[in-house]
Length: 496
Image 1 (cartoon, one colour):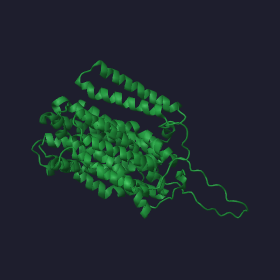
Image 2 (spheres, rainbow, N blue to C red):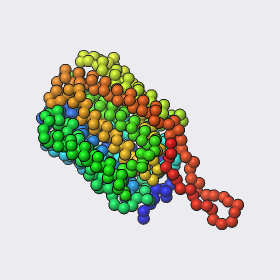
Image 3 (spheres, rainbow, N blue to C red):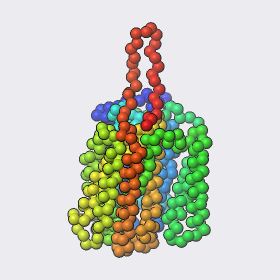
Image 4 (cartoon, rainbow, N blue to C red):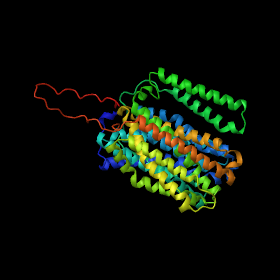
């Protein structure tokens, strides 16, 4: 029998049932986020083994981000309609199957194709993980639960280079994909501990036109951005024009559709719109850092894969220790200050890394920038997610989560596609130490500017009371008058 979100027990953060929901959601989404960065450290070995140029390596990363961003909104809609846990499990299975195909890929073309499929699986499971938390926890515990989810998935993102480096050194770059098999098996085996939830108001046909146009728009523009530096041909121009036209069509379809994949009404909330604007800018900077950092250390400074991966370990430690506290801080003082200060601190860390040169030691040159970057990241990751969801109706948790995730992925996708072109890391230049060093320094300056812009946007657009919980609905009423109690008031979307 269908279960509506309203019928789910509103779980406490410290309850055993709440811990199960959080653990499964973190493990599933963490697997997808881990794969977004664990591959980065394997890129040099992967490129040499498969004889791939810079553009092919960009597709290994952006192919995954492309389908993840293209279909994550559809994944959120499917979860709201057919059950968030059900779609979450289906996405996990697809993700694991594609990971196996990545591990055995004989050519870079096969690997790119498998990464595209992997992104589709990630698009199904990622919005469901957060929507399950939003629908399961009681209102006053949601910011803490979302904070824990953000922090722990952030740890999986930050620990990716270390795990990837170890696997590349000890086994092969192919082992970074095999890691998903046991993780996915655990998620599927224990997913029954998560209560099923769905949007009781979801009805009508799914927005496949919107999903198709969104995918074509991102694919066309991404292809033009990546392949353009290799030569502006008729095919590149056609892809760019088709991509832009599809994106315009996507917006028009979403405006007129009876059941839009991305309801534009969500953006009437200032909180929701502001949080997603900050997400786009700041995650573009974060994506640039994780894309280039470990490759720069290997190519320019001669680090081994495991040493390059270990270089970001301070970020992991900071996220693990402070993420839950960051969520609590944002709830107490409001998200405006953390989302203003955090991106500026990130920018300082990125600028410190522009001074790293071949021959420098890790402790004196690399470590300070990484630590400062991590300190800023921990102030951003949890509050930005909680703020985005606070601006949407609880019944649209899957769609709101999908939109926020999609915007973060599109930002990272564009960063990987555009930044190497802007800083001159194209063709075989990716493997040339001097070219990589110069390009990395310029890339960190660009990323720092983006991050500062995100902090400025947060200061002027996000209110300090955005995370203030509304009074929870009472289940019982006492009334001195005869007759039945009055009906429970209908929950309204958060207004700011």
